[in-house]
Each structure stands twice: as structure tokens, then as C-alpha cells.
Image (cartoon, helix red, strand yellow):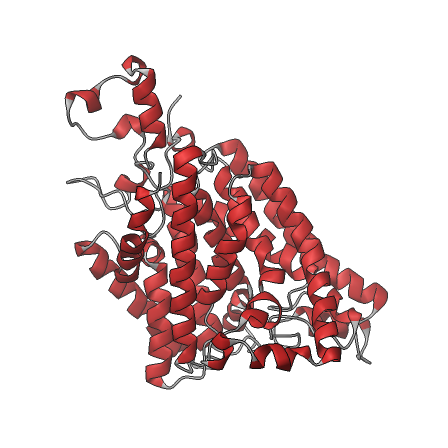
Length: 443
């Protein structure tokens, strides 16, 4: 039995290479072509798989996959557009469909972005089978180089004084913290993500409360050289920033677990399509129920108003970590609150979006091309949108007219389509690929 669900080589390494469609194949065909649709080449390439020697099979298994699921790029493109919405979109409190979409994007798009980053780490470190031996050491080197580049790039962007809270430096730290987990398989990664989702927010709350009481926050920031030059310092990256590792690592670990699965298998997609919504209900619904039962912090309104205020994007906390004034804040699920409820709900949304994007891209691949093109060069597009916000003098706070958001989306699509017409990688993706090239020499 053959078909897209049984194609084992579904993913190319992100920001490194893309399958290129041949004449008449279409742009997406080269990303999804399986073993039975490879182009005619040398005699060895055309040899029946059953005639391969053991050495040839082993060599083929170690090579990067020749195909790529466009749905991953579609999900990544949607995440980028969601971050556009969070920065230059209309106010989520506006009534109607537009406000609802902006509310949906708030917090969840960046969580989806982080989950897809974890999935990318799975691709780099061996896809379904964690890489070992020399391949494993090369994967570690590649991840470390990427982490350093992202830390430097993110810090440099933050130092410009941009109004955007740049996520890239946080990504660099996430990659480094994820290294011990890259040798784990799906079950272990899922357990690690669950444990971190439960323990991380509570640990963050306790640590930040202790720092506030002791006055160490100012002392640590004052002695942090990165903080001194205008970047996000160690304390921000770990606990107090907008994307602190203490509460954001579960997204990366969940993405790693997704990447270890065969996402071309129908049984896996079916299970994930159940797990995603269930986690969403447990997260957001659990928060609403907890607030009804235990009440919210410093609120005097009725129970339903509490739920509306604390689980919505405009009435909740927007700073990346909940207030330490009251443990009751740990019951909310508002965007960027960093609670267990929010993390679980966001992971559920991310899983659902990824699986839905896979299905949509397979059925309507050509129609999805504008978004998937953006997804293939998300690092470049994200960086350019931060630069554009500064050039245009925008505040990176939701409240801009809808045409501004649509303009950003149209500009990103136009750039990605034109660039991908002539080049295999986005500009920053090309630089990142060159930077990680030395990892191949690790023995």
C-alpha cells in the first residue's frame, strides 16, 4: 500500500534544504515526493529498493530525507502571521470576527512557533530515530551553533530598542536546554513536556517571588553584561522575560515529541487530532473551572465575569509570567501568563493546528503555496517584520487598523514567493546553513 501517509522520508531539515520540483511537477510536489516518485537518475538511483545492499540501505537511512511535508511549512507560516497579528493587528477586544481572530492569535501563535521549533530540533537530531554516534555528535554541534546564532541575532535586535519583544534569543536558550532531550523518543519526550508544564510555572512563581522579596532581581540585572548592553539578560531568559524558559520549554519538548512521530501515518494523525482538542479543553476549560471553584485574585465581580476577565486576552496578564502577588494567578489561562493551564491549552492548540495543516496542505497544496512559502523562510520573514515595525514607527501593540496587518501579510507573501522562485533558501536561512556547515566535520 502506497501513499502520502506511508512515505517515511517526510521532512527536510528546516532552513537548510528544500526539495525542488522538476519541470511540470509543481512547487509542492518536490516536498512530498516519496520513494516511488523519485526522478529518473543513475542506474543505482533507479535500482529496485529490494536489491539494495545492507550498506546502501544504511547509507540511505542516514541521509536527510528527500521529501518534506508542506503542512509543517503551512503551520509555520500561520504562526508567523499570528505573530504579525499580535504585533500590528487590531485590538482583540474589538467585537466581531476580526477581534475574535486577533484574540485567537494572541499568545497561541508564539506558542505554536515554539512548538514548531521543537519539531525542527527533532528533524535535526534524527527525525523518528534519535541520532547516535557521529551523526548524533554532528546534530549536537549543529544545534549549538544555531543556538549561538539565534542568541546573538536576538540580542542584537533587542539592543536596537525595537518595540517588539524579540523571541529569537529565547529560542537560542531553548535549543541549548533541549540538548539533553534530543536523544529521547516520543514517550519520554511527552512525559518530560507534561512534567515541565506542571512544575515549571510553579517553580517560576516561587523563584520570582523570592527574587522580588530579596531584591536580587536588580542586583543580578545590574551585573549581567548582556542586560548592560540592552539585551535580555539571563534572568529574563530564564524566569522574568516575555518568553521565559521556565514556562516555555514544554512547547519545545512537545514539538520534539511530535517530530519523533511518523506524521505521515494516519493512525498518528488521528490520535493527535483527539489529543490536541482534549488538551485545549483541559487547559482553558480547567482554568475556567478552577476560577469558578476557587475564585480569582483581587476580583469582586461575579463568577462568569471572572472567567471572562482572566481567561481572555485583554483582561489577563500579558507580561510573560503571572504576578507573584497572589497564588491565585496560577489559575488563569490568559495569553502569556505562563501558567500550567495556559501551557496545556496552547500545546493542544498547536497540535491541532499542525495536524490540520498537514491535511489541508495535502489536499489543497497549490492553494496553500503563499503561506507555505513564508513558512520555509520564517526566520527571515520574522526578522524583516521586526525591522519594518521600527521603520514605520509602530508600537508593536495590538490596536492598528486591519489594513496594516493585511499589508504586512501581503508583503511577507510577496517577498517569500519571489525569493523562493530564484533561491532555495531565505536569506537568513542561507546564512544559518553556512554557519552550521562546520558541524559536518565533527567526528
